[in-house]
Amino acid sequence: YTNTTEAFVIRNPGGRITTGLQSLLFVDTLTGGQALKDIVIVHHLDCGCTHITDDIIKDALKAKSPELGAEIDNIVFGTYSAKNMQQHINNIETDIKFLKDSPLVREELKERVHAYIFDLQSGKLIAVPTND
Amino acid sequence: YTNTTEAFVIRNPGGRITTGLQSLLFVDTLTGGQALKDIVIVHHLDCGCTHITDDIIKDALKAKSPELGAEIDNIVFGTYSAKNMQQHINNIETDIKFLKDSPLVREELKERVHAYIFDLQSGKLIAVPTND
Image (cartoon, rainbow over all chains, first blue to last red; front, side, top):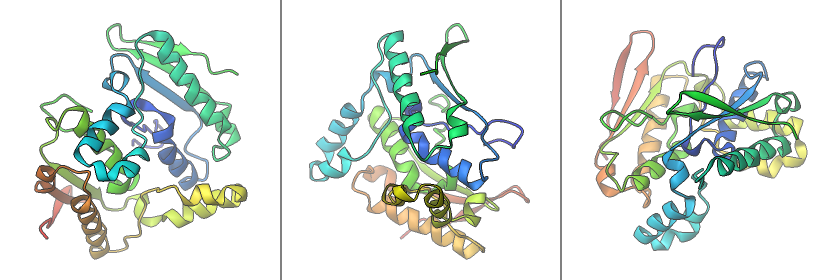
């Protein structure tokens, strides 16, 4: 985290909302809604999280600890498969919908959700539309 | 995250293991146990997370969304009360025990857990013993 004139960066494997929501609600509640004015989702291309899925990680953990299958199944690792740009966009759209559907997120924040895919090779941000 | 010659930094509100374990297991499993050689827990003094508790955040969320009480109660925000150094140390010891008791964490990693409290004012790290 940086100072209050800059951005709160919630960095989590996969960049998924499901694993970042706890941090977002924490910061927003702690500051009485003063710290967060916008939500900016940024994924990047060629992330390990796009090649590995939660099932792959869960299967590896279950192979080591088969007796913990139920506990392992309950963990959300935030990975996703994205072999092309449309799949990246679909995943982000899923998360935007999750955010907007969540009654725990402030309505003002829902109006100010932005999303980008960061292309590491070109250094460019590709905007993903966030309107319904 | 940085490159593989450096440290994977899992930065989460409160610095608690309970909210960082998913990222730790993710990285360790994804890399087949090759990326993580040591676990270093670092808390810092005067963190907002030591003044606010999960109950305070949950009460604030429930006041806004009373119908979601059960869902809110299930969220782990990773905050803790620590008004003196001994309470900081107790919280870290609780997390070290949680790590060492978890059957999902590799035994080799459990042998290499280190913990520090970062004093922002002096810039010094205070070591917390990690032996049983």
